[in-house]
Image (cartoon, rainbow, N blue to C red; front, side, top):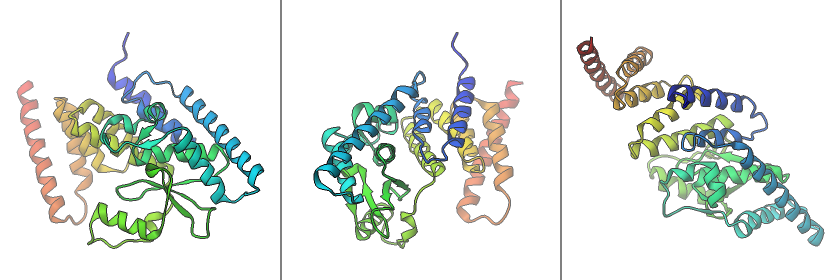
Length: 297
């Protein structure tokens, strides 16, 4: 017998919470594979975790051969070996032609198809590197996820796995920042700081939610929102979005409950004009929902 969707969402949310609690070593591959379970409900993470382990061993062997043959034990030399393994031998590449394909945000598909978006390719890079003995951190850069190797130089080395492991200068990052956010916002080097596991998972979920909403795949978008509320329980905007998605799905009681609660939680303090306009729109939804609910009784 098929389990109800609500039960499946709760099981997935509980599993993700457990995976996040166990991510003290910064390894979030299991969390990413659980998220992919929204698109692939029968996905078993174990074979993909085993594949990452095998790739890490292969990369470590390639690095060791390089050290033996050249005597070069530098971090930069080991990174070149890692890049050669991932991008030349294994053929990982950025999916520039079908960037919005939800498969690009699912780690299992990225490992199977050897292509993805900056975030998922960075995740593969981090996971394989760590298994090969290299410490790589995620960088939650606006518009384009990156990674850094803090041991490669006094200020760290910024790397773009979406572009075949290209090393970026700060000036490169400034230009990339301007392309994504415009010239009116000042660049801050704090944008290159290491991302926490929670920040990486939230970004992965937000990417998926945006894609599903764009595709009008509202059940999946609501599942993503449920997971976002597990990872970021204080994010009131996710409560609002869950209510709006329930509205689209004609789940009127849940929509009314979520939107009323959102208005209660978000109404404290000074609000700017945009927030006031948004709250007015949500209040109109609430009034419509109350009328519709009354008509059902």
